[in-house]
Image (cartoon, rainbow, N blue to C red; front, side, top):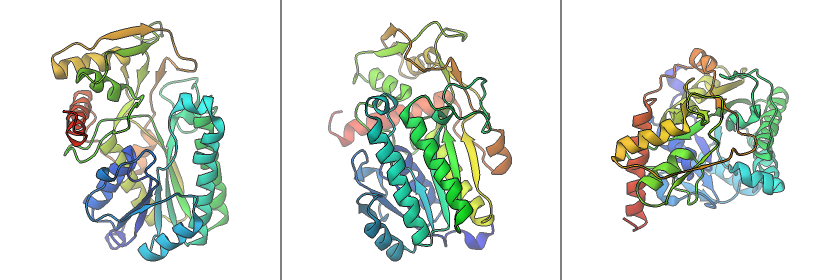
Length: 339
């Protein structure tokens, strides 16, 4: 990207007070981009935002509010993280997910077109692949979501693709694998109560906030029988968003869809053993049956993002991811007055 473009494109981050969104805000602000946030704070936290970043408390379905933000901030790019992310809940309450993730995204995309926003980064997911036939899984693998969460995200990808063909807007859909860790400076991290991500659950258990960790399935076709996943540090993921935005600005006629992962995985037991090493104590494990729809292994083929962006992960060591997650969990206890 030409250097003259940097720092001159105001970015609106939806869901910017949430886990991944707040790290994207930090990455943008650290690099000098003008950034503002819209968040309804249903799952986000004001404390996750750095000083000096405007926060508009409201909903991405509110066209009048979005128009006001675009006018006040001069918004020319959107990073869209707002939405619901709990897979089992999407099965139990599918219409919530089609509303929050699909209908509201449609409203946001429409407002972007009406407001002259040129670039759109979308927080998508590996759940769009469903249970892939092969692993690592590449971007052109069949998209067969097995839950409303994955389908709601895939539908938004389709809307963006169709919109980019009809209007002056390009987009990048980033399909996340398993996001983990926290800002290395402990400025933000996973703060949601009752989170279901393995590393978050494991560090809570290691610090006495949970009694144990449930292991769902011990008979997978993996080395130790537990599921293998591709864990990506949230700060590396945030860095990928900034680089993707630079690429969209540099090539306004191009849109992108890319996996975000490291291209290698760890099993559930390997993760728990790593947390044990970090804390010098053993987490209690409760072995249970498989959950429906969990593949043996889900690892990204990340060759496309590596070839397209100058993305060089800085925190891909599992012990580093866990160390940052633990540091944030301790700080979170201080913020909430529980430690």
